[in-house]
Image (cartoon, rainbow, N blue to C red):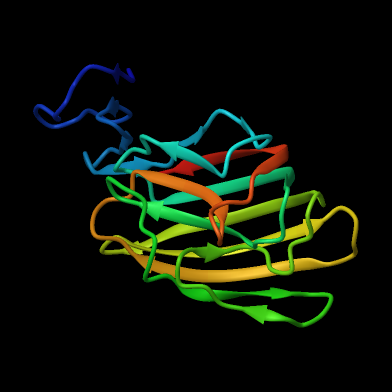
Length: 193
């Protein structure tokens, strides 16, 4: 018979086949009593991107290895390009590598203060798409993303990386100048172990 244990902090004894245990993560066991982590997906709470200069998702668990940041109709009141910043205890604002390319014009830009996800931003134009962040190892995260604009036939493609000083626990969406204000749309994240 299978068993589910939701209160155990550590595995006591040899697990029986089919057991599942919760220890901040889900595990399954087979007939050889081998444990394998099972991936779980957690959806955050969508945040309206209708005010403020940044949108923060905090309290991301230490077991997370993949984060998808989703944008729907996001707009700002200015032309500073959008970027994602990561953090371990606080937001990291330097040391990023990578670039973003605007498909319609071929223009490519780089910014070391964040993972830039759109360039040639137009005020009050809505953007949608997703950026995937994946743990490479040793607190180094890599990103790849696609964002498209409603009012034009252009898509931006981005890729980048950042080595954090500790375990990631937060994601910030902001602009390069940090002062343009969000005025439309919503943002959410999904994270996985």
